[in-house]
Image (cartoon, rainbow, N blue to C red; front, side, top):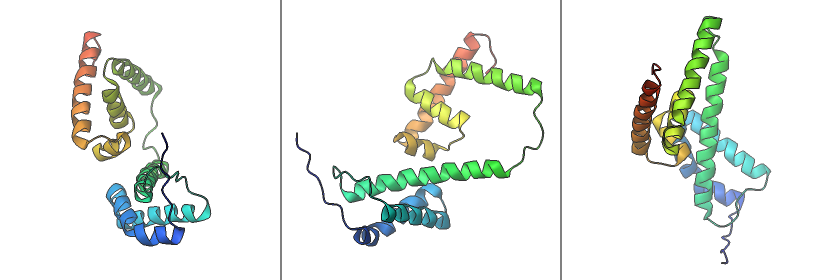
Length: 169
């Protein structure tokens, strides 16, 4: 089957045509107009410096939308890492507390083996990585309602599994 290759507009045309849309996408994901502007500038600066990953199988607007979503999510991740680095731990964790935390994490990971793949992904992103519902929905490309129901069902199943093994949830 032959795939029609769509033409890619010049960088100037791409910027002129899609900047406003790109800004709206970034603002919706990162939640702040100034931060969204930074994401858009970064994306277009990268596009101006090196050839794009555009392969012509989708329209340039579809391709740019995906680039903006991915770049915005990456920007959020980087911001989270920067914020964690700025905050000093308030109190050193005792070896006992560390051991309990490690043991709890091991039990949680074992319980995750008994839930569906989607529930496992949602639980991991929410409980272990701290992502919000909209962020998880964007990452997994599923509706936010599906994230909520998968999280609820996954928690119930994981809790039941822990209780079956006599462990505290």
